Amino acid sequence: MRYLNTILTILAVLLALQLWTTWSNMDQQSPLFVSEAYAQEGIPNAASQRKQMIDLLKEQNAKLERLIKLMESGKMRVRVEAGQ
Image 1 (tube, rainbow, N blue to C red):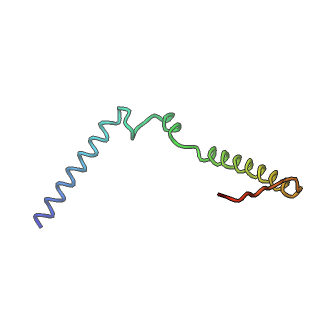
Image 2 (tube, one colour):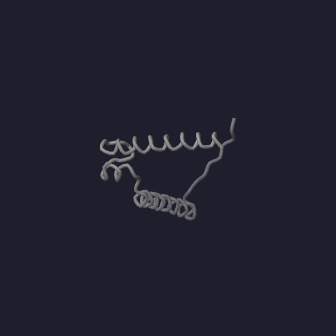
Image 3 (cartoon, rainbow, N blue to C red):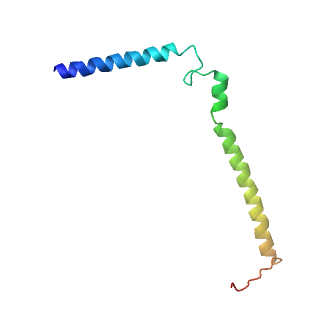
């Protein structure tokens, strides 16, 4: 029982030290307490990323449609050569 009390006391002291260091760094520009503007710049904008992905997919679809039309028109010529 004495061992358990010792471990719990050590843990309580370590937690108290952790709280003290966290609160004492609040005034400074620590990574945990950055300004709101910086936090907004550091967070990726998921909506913007999705819009870019959708735009790129639309581009790829347009290119694929042009390629399909070219194949269907019969104007595409394919030449196969024997490899060495």
